[in-house]
Length: 443
Image (cartoon, rainbow, N blue to C red; front, top):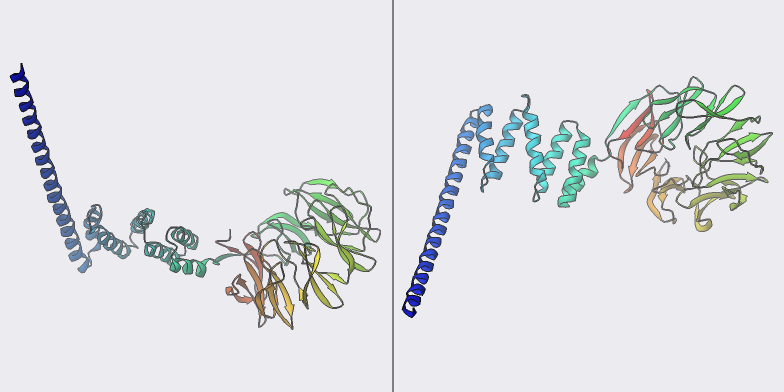
């Protein structure tokens, strides 16, 4: 039995040695096969590219494309070069049906790769810009910036982010956009349009307020009532009012018996009278009593007591945004932040919007400050409106354009008049009349 055990162990060791030898041989064979195959693939790919290059030199792109497509399908050190040659061929055949799609599909595939370089995104964006597809170019640039952080892509994005489309409309007068809608006038009658100028409520009223809480206040003949976006009447004012202001925060100023009172959208009328009353914004409205102006909240408590000659308001009657208000006293405009007067003083000002800087005037020129009163853009403009979103309308040499938050021109000065951006759109006056410009990229 002992001899048999020894013989068995010897046999087992021999079998193990044989198995190890076989495995080593198989590994060597596999390595050789991979090497030979790779070399064969590389050679085949190189041959395809050489044949394609000969055809391209003769201007025969249509026959070169299949060869390059096959070459680009391999995964070797020459694949990137094959793809670039393939794109060149696609570009040469761009006017032939289907090749523009082939080109953009290859670009999309390249951009999806984890290690996609910035130059691919730059190439794609440049192509979309050349073909007037600015929205697609901006989307590509944002993706590329997110992947690579490239300064070139950032600069390219900033140089094109203010592209816009124009919608010319036949309105005689327009106001400022509020809540993505705008009051418009034709032949002396008012209606409501979208921020892009498309009519929502027909121009059939002597007056119409801003739209808020699913309604606007309108006047037709002797009647004042509210309508919804479908122009259906939803509430009726039973009191006799001479005039009304703009509607927001479920409050509407009404002029009744020579006094301004505020009411809700259902026309529940308050008892506190004012000499003047503006539009609510952020829960506050400018109000005048005893010959002086202040600012009241929704409960009609004074945030700023009525001690001022004027509360600076915008076109709609708003005075409050970003916790800031401007008030004029003895010819000087003071900035209030969170209800408290700061040390900042100006010759004139425009109210803040919900974001961005406010336009202020010193020594005959307009500049911009933040809500703390710090100068953000110097005093160099003839006139200006506060920033709406990330653009501000400014006037220079009699023409209006728009600047970005860095103070640089974003939309050239070529308009007779301009209003602030809201919901990506703004109204501009040209020799042809009012036009609505809408940014392709504004969120």
